[in-house]
Image 1 (cartoon, rainbow, N blue to C red):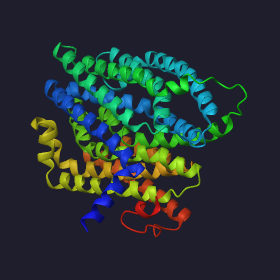
Image 2: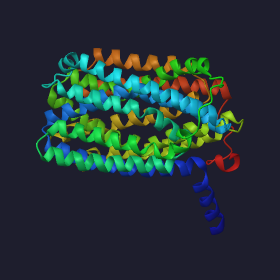
Image 3: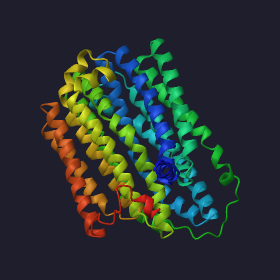
Length: 437
């Protein structure tokens, strides 16, 4: 019996989704822990108003780089297919063209942020236009990193991705604490983010040296039409998906006082612990699904496993938030005025749990080129934006709108999956991948 359990455990660890997720999970856990320590330091060093500024700027950054995530998704979709079929010349050509394009695009983004800095300053009720310009610089660097990040995921370089994430977090916490102590406050925290991104970007070239050194072929039939056809709806889907957990923070900063915006920022930080624990699973699943789909292998079992691994931990964390909200707030945020948001934590956690499951569904459909889901996710994100603009008297209204929008989208995608594949009856056991891998 013990040998059977040991053998099962060994098989679990060797499964590509599990092993890849473990590496990414370690990177995320260590990075999240270091970010948590940094956020504890910032929460206790900043006033609630300063932390509200910082949280809103991070949300602005998150919204601005959402298209970057969609670009990563698109690049992974085609680069993984090239690598799976050993088409290295096509992969090299794709890499070279995209790197040049992204450099120009990053420069235009920085110019755009600079040109709109006064408007954004007024919209977010900031006291310094340089906050926006600094965020623009970070966003530009994030876009410049897109191509390397996508190719590393396509090559399943999860150990290196984890190492890079941890290194960036170490730099962020070290530089961030030092600069805040020196009196740079929000500016210091933002510069820490910039330097962490910069170092991670520079070292990302190391595992790609074999591709960079490869000579480009001039006689390649490049699938530009297929890429454009996939890119537009996939970008809408990823943009809309990520806006579901960013729009609320931006609109709270706009409609509520600086003090309340800071409290809501703290609430979102604690709620998103659920995402930090389970988010890596979807990111690892995506290139693996593409690889299986491209080579004609079974891919549904991988989706079931990802769904299982995301849902179960999320349920436990949400239950803890409902039962012990004040303990959770005190642990993560140090209590003080943040205790006021403890009644909202369970509901906010439920919203993040629904979003996590939705994230798995969206990545599944995009990995197999089912891009029409973009209209569903886009409609949900638009509905969230409109409804929060209309109903924002309390935090409960804001959270319930976000929860409802995400839940409706999830239900629709679930129905689409049932319509496409019949049902979940193909699951042979609680851990289907054992028999299907």
